[in-house]
Image 1 (cartoon, rainbow over the protein chains, first blue to last red):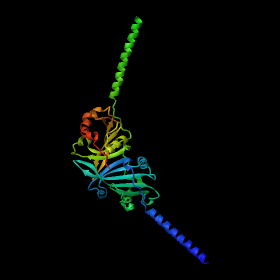
Image 2: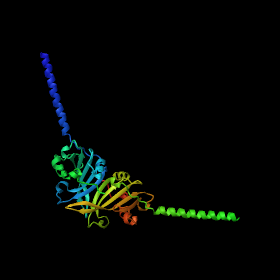
Image 3: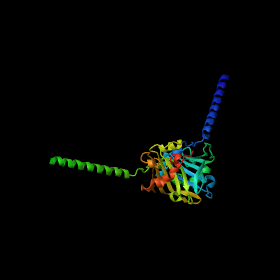
Length: 168
Length: 168
């Protein structure tokens, strides 16, 4: 009887340890940032550009010159006005805008904004994951994708939460 | 003797016709525009952008927002600071710049400027052919590449007659 009790205790302990370690692995997995750094995006198709100047409502967040880039999946959807498939990625590449001799030229990079489509992972934010990488680094700057990004993008539901269209 | 004379006349006539038609073909070939329309350039790598505003010395010619694109051959040279091989093509895509609510957005296309490297064909202008295509058409607008384009590009001999460098 004593031996049986010992075995039972070992079994129960193993079971508890098993549950706990699975929990740790799962929570680590959930903490892992889901939006990937968009390696090679500078060679993707350039969609359009815009300069946001002092006085514009978005100046504090996005003042400067920004370029929109689309990977192949995103580009096809954007051109065809179709929903974006999982794997579509859009880039908002924000650089300082320097005024020089009646011209505006590009300055250093401020942030690389990324929208990455994964309808399951990001179901809470229209199927899009949002992230920003500071300057030329891989330091993540978005702590609240829903409040910081989706709050504005939500208004563009008709164009699948994307602001840009592809110019002719 | 009469037949021999006839044959001689036919031979000489054929020879003259031959010379003349070769001349016509050659002069047509020389008249044919040498710089090709850069099909698909919107999917090439975007190098950088700039806004040229009223008061800038180049405003009359190039006022607006322009984007520089490079094909693969041009991009490798630009990144490495190396001479451009034949076949390298650079694009100067000029759009109207519209001021809206403290921002500058893209308007209609004004001109697609093209630099196409062919060291033999364009030996007179640093090995580069220069052309401009009006708006969204294939109408050519450069009548004097040497005076209209190379006169300025000549100053950039150290960077192989190219103004842009590839930003990090």
